[in-house]
Image (cartoon, rainbow, N blue to C red):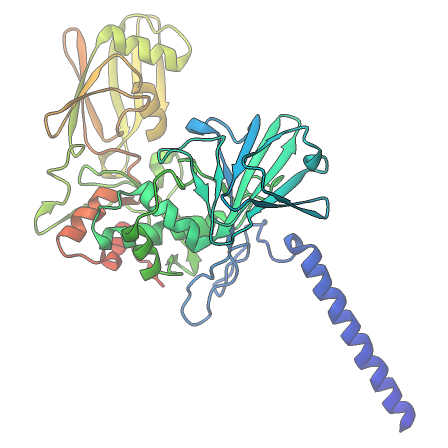
Length: 440
């Protein structure tokens, strides 16, 4: 009996040691345990830095997101120099050491001795303060950031990473993506969209070499370009943890500026409608008042482009001289009547352009004006406002009549605001733009 008890004690001791070893592995190598880099997910939880969802509510936990901060003008994630400051000073951590910096602005170059082993992290000595990154500018001027800042050194330059809680991140995404003066229910819809989109992105690293999930530009979601606003912060708080679910997965909640009364689906980007994205359907953005956005500036617009300028734009896009244009036509349309294929024929050749973003690129550029729904004339830009267009040939020009602003997939932000003005709450708004979903 004593021998038996001794064996039991040995087994219990062995299991306890094994548990400690496994726990240590999780602490030392958290990236190896459930970081979701394979993109796998289950109905009960999302894997990844976003953490698990609450089994009862489905709400996402407030885990940290890592954001790569781009240079001024969002030109690159690689910085030639980085300047950091906080009123109280900075606590720097590198090479297993800590250093308190109270000498004003800290400017780092790639060959700084503190970066010789790859990177350092900085936090304000006063935890209530934020870190200013004085080497970049945003719409708000010199930006400051909650959480911590990491600076990584590489052969081509330095990368700046801001790590902070998801909900804090969203408080600076929402006012950067939607005017803080918009209706509260529209801001709530934007907060849920932004959170859902971020959770999807946190299932993998966009920049695995720096363990960063996203950058702070329109390539993902614009972050901290505008000052925080009480209304946007309240919208985030009122929807804390809520995301859009479709068939047990968090949905990719794409959004854009303004609709022409219709949206489209994933075929506009050259994809296919399938079971995983069927919530992104072409819908009519209308109610008892008709099209919600009918009085907005970008609801409809017209551009007249000379034949010579049109030929130059299309030739530049194609990388070959099309010569004198004979025709420019929309030769295929997608759901919502969006242009899905454009064909241009000239006496020097022809091109076919597919997908809404490529069509907008091909017809975008300088050298013509656009007359908006409100009568205001504006200069053309790099992209055509949308691909919800028709094209009419005149004697010496082409007239493009279009509607909306943006890609047209998912939620129209101005449509959401107009719906809110008409008494719709954020749940109703989201369930119009994303069909057959749950918000929890």
